[in-house]
Amino acid sequence: MFCFSQEKEQQQITATIKDSTVIDAKTIFGIDSFETLYYSTENNSFHKKTKDTIITYANFQLGEITSVNTFNPLKINLFYKDFNTVVILDNRLAEISKIDFNTIQPYKNVSFVTSGFNKTIWVFNADFQYLELYDYNSKKVKLKTMPVQSRVLDLTSDYNYCYLLTENFLYIYNYFGSLIRKIKNTGYEKLAFNEAHILLKKENSLFILEKNKSEIHPVKHPKMLIKQFLVTNQTVYIYDENLLRHYQLKTD
Image (cartoon, rainbow, N blue to C red; front, side, top):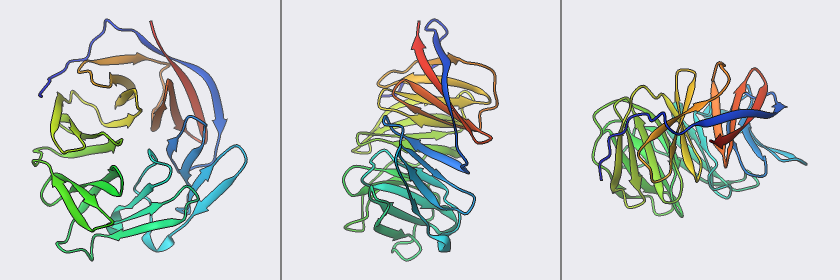
C-alpha cells in the first residue's frame, strides 16, 4: 500500500520538559522504559548504565561505533561501518556473534544496520541500494527488497517493521520485506522509533508519525539545537553538551 502524506496541523502535540540527566557521552543510542542508558564515550567504548551498575564493551580494533540498535536488549547490534562489521551483544554485553561482511561471499558493502526478528539483522546493501534481511546464524540472506532511488538517511526497526528514510521517501516494510507504506519526505533528516510512533527530525523541529498512520504531525517544543534525540513511550529525550533532557509528550 502506498500512502503520500503531508504534515497535518490540526492535532496539537506538545513536548514539555519534565527532567534532565547529566551524562558524559559521545553518542546516546538507546533508553528503555526503565531508563537504562546505552551510550558510547570518546574512546569508542559502549556502555549500558542502569540505576545500579555500568557495564562496558570495547573493541578498539574496529574503531568508531557507527550505530547501535537496542530494541532487543538480549541481542544488541553494534555497527562499525569503517570495518563493514556488526557485533551482536547479549544483555551483559558479551559477544554473541561477529559478522565481518568483508569475509562473507558474496561480499556486501553495508551502510546501515538494524535489528530483525530472531537471529536476523536488516542491512542496507550500498552497492545495490536495497535492504536485505540477513540471518547471521545460517549466514544466508532471507529476503531482499526492491532497490530505492535516492540517498539513504536513516534506518530503524522492531520485530514486525523496518523503517527506511531516504531523501525522497520514508519506506515502511513488514518482516516479510513487503512495502506497506511509502510517505513523501518533505525535509526529514533523521528518525527515532518507539512501539507507538515514529519521531522525525527536520532541522531543529520534531514531528510524529503514529504507528499504522499516514499523517505526520508537528511537535510543539522549546526552540533548541537538536543534535541527538530518542523516544521511549511518551518521553522524548534530547541530548546536547552532556545534558540529557526529558520531555513529556501530550496530545491536546
